[in-house]
Image (cartoon, rainbow, N blue to C red; front, side, top):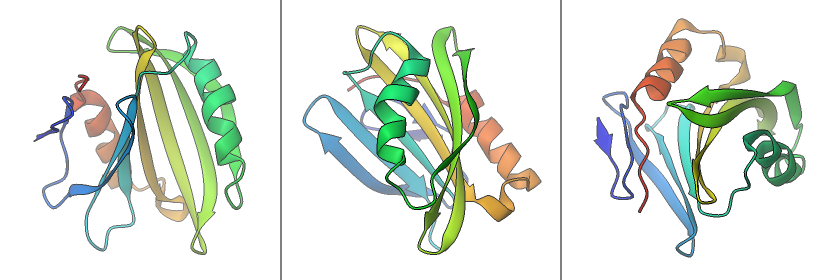
Length: 149
């Protein structure tokens, strides 16, 4: 179990660690996890500037930026759901990164007071259906515990 100084926790594979942290002042951050030589990543994003509709956050705030990525294509509709009792939405997409097609599953959820998290699981698109990837995503979603800085 990884306990981030930012206040959240999530179970990670044994050889995984924090690869990168980016911040937008005190209002937002993204922590990316992975392992050397493993093309898969988990990104945890926190923001204090999200709107009241998680579907609209993906559609209006996130997707326009993703559309600038090489080869961007959304897979299916943005789906409203719940996560740990919070309003949430799921979005999947593909992009081309350094000549490799990658696929991402994103789950964003609202904590209230304009605060929210997203979990983004990214893996080479060709490996998307591998059982190990399903297990990893299920583990991230079942063990993630939100907090705030």
